[in-house]
Amino acid sequence: MPVFPFDDAHIERAAQLLRAGELVAFATETVYGLGANALDERAAAKIYAAKGRPAFNPLIVHIADTLGAQSLTTGWNQRAQALADAFWPGPLTLILPKIDAIPAIVSAGLATVALRVPSGEAAQRLLRAAQIPLAAPSANASGEVSPTLAAHVVASLGEEIFVLDGGACEVGIESTVVDVSGAHTAILRPGSISEREIATVVGPLSSFSPSQAETSEPRASPGMLLRHYAPRAPLQLFSNLSEAHFHAVASRAERLGVIAFAPTRLDAHCELILPLDAAPYAQKLYAALHRLDGDGKDGEAGCDWILVEDPPLLPAWEGVRDRLRRAARG
Ligand code: TXA
Ligand code: MG
Image 1 (cartoon, protein in one colour):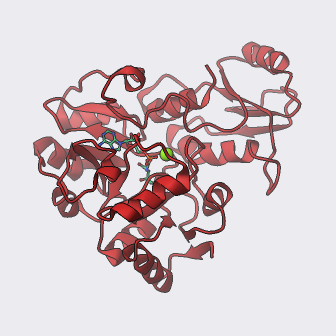
Image 2: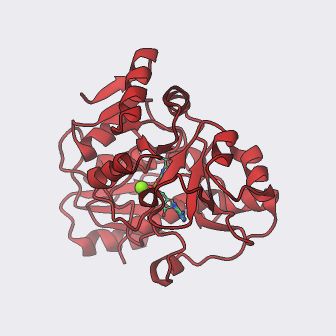
């Protein structure tokens, strides 16, 4: 049953499936999400099963507007309101104290819930038609690169899932996750909205070391597994061409894949050039990784090693740099 356009008839069909406790994958402006009724424990359990997602990794709950978000938390506050006013609908997720009606499986047993009002048209129309909050992680098997095209969803999760096709996602990397549940505001996952933009709205942030997510108990953001968003092939970053040539030889790759800002003249099986501009780069990054990686079917290059040119150390590139660091080995 896999991929359908988001016209009225298919939005209605998808909304019915969701109300009946089934899964629907749908386009958002960031990546495709795998949605289920966030107030239905059995429906949410199907997400974990379909993705092979570890039970300690909580889900993001999507609602159509700020009012919907307010109704799901006991702790709405001024910082939440200011950030919602500035960035919703859009690629921002807020962590807030949850109401009891959100089952423990959605929040992975935490007292907080992740809330997001997406701006993507398919997502907005689906949320308004379904009239229920939708728990939705990225629509890929756990640990894989997130989908930014309907075809990526089918390749990762198979033909059984109903997919609402919204074309290529505009933002291309997952939302910025900001914890406003306590006295301090902290960024738990960088995204296209930078730390600087968040701080402009709510003032200075508390520092957060990503490694803390791995070691501290309880986990601050349980989903921040160090190796995540990763293609099957090993991925290495390089900052200049001599380093790239060294890695290319040392890797002994048979089918080398390269992502760079300009042609490298490496002996690559497939080389993709992405723009030196953070927003369009982010939009294309996951599709580039899917294309280089994979099993060589469906136009994938089937590379056995991937070299990626290190993006600039600038605020606009925070989200992209985070994802590449997680995808890289070691
Ligand atoms: O852009 C996005 O956020 C996409 C689209 C589909 O909306 N969704 C997404 O979901 O990326 P997922 O499940 O792949 O990532 C959810 C992130 C994880 O890092 C998880 O740990 C964090 O949100 N998270 C969820 N609930 C949390 C909570 N209560 N406290 C801290 N972190 C939480
Ligand atoms: Mg994910």
